[in-house]
Amino acid sequence: MPKTEHSQWYVEEFAPTEFHHHAIDEMYYTGRTPFQSVAVLRTPVFGKMLVLDGDTQSSQADERIYHETLVHPALAAITDRREILILGGGEGATLREVLRHPGVARCTMVDIDGEVVELSKRYLAEWSAGAFDDARANVIIGDALAYLKDDRGTYGAVISDLTEPLADSPSFPLFNGDVFRDIKARLVPDGVYVLQASTAGFHNMALHAKMARSLRAHFRHVASFYTHVPAFDNDWAFLACSDSHDLATLDPARIDGYVSQLHGENYFYDAQTHRRLFSLPLYLRRELAREGDVFA
Ligand code: SAM
Image 1 (cartoon, rainbow, N blue to C red):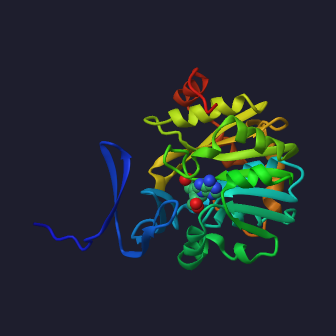
Image 2: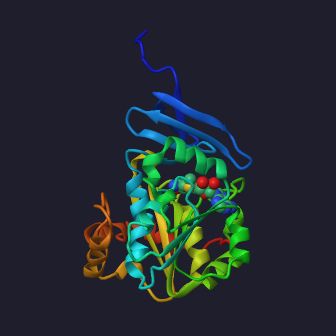
Image 3: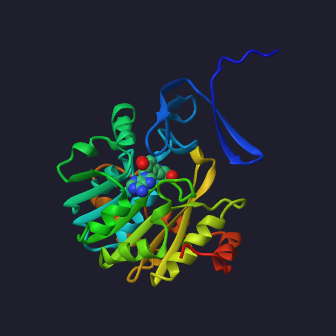
């Protein structure tokens, strides 16, 4: 019987009949918070990983692919970057990317789970890279739903870095018409609402399409974009919603001009990458064009 040096494995479901086995080199933390189960572990290929409710949230090896894609197309498009709002974003990497632009005066991040934020500070410091200590960071531990109901601020961009809106997820109540209206009301006139919008994988793109259909009832432009995120073992999708900007047609010179203003170097995103992100395959365009259910 061939020997294997790994006795512990993190197994993530790709589909009910497909699983991805990650050998565990080190388990830093595993437990339950009032909102979700949390695991922080290290694997040989992806390095450290954050897992919530059995779903990989991000990995050391490729988190910049996800976080640069979520943040920079939207911030490149808008003109007023002074105030930015992040819904979720526990690890602090979305906050990190937003604060790389000198035009941001304050970035408010609202995450429901203080334990996830503290565990990320303790075990995943590379993700936030000092962003939590930045004077422009306004970190609030609380339900984003309640925050949106009470808040009267306006933002150049609202960035949704929440867990997937699955029925048992604490993020589910944030995906409906009332919340989309609340978010739109918080945007400045040329503002952008951008969200991680589930998978664009050929085998399970229905949730992404449902999100796009739902948001078309609220915004003039709803642009779908996606990229492969190796740690998710899947094509991951995003949506950019605005009445002013169609991010699919953003001027490349504007993008590269914006990227040149950021502190530090990008790993993944620039004008050429942008073109690829918004070039959707036929099967996905067909799925997005289909009639179907919505988040009412
Ligand atoms: N990259 C991840 C993904 O693709 O699914 C998302 C990462 S981030 C860790 C997700 C965060 O959403 C978690 O920290 C979780 O606590 C937060 N969250 C879930 N529901 C929330 C709610 N109702 N209000 C605020 N934050 C919430």
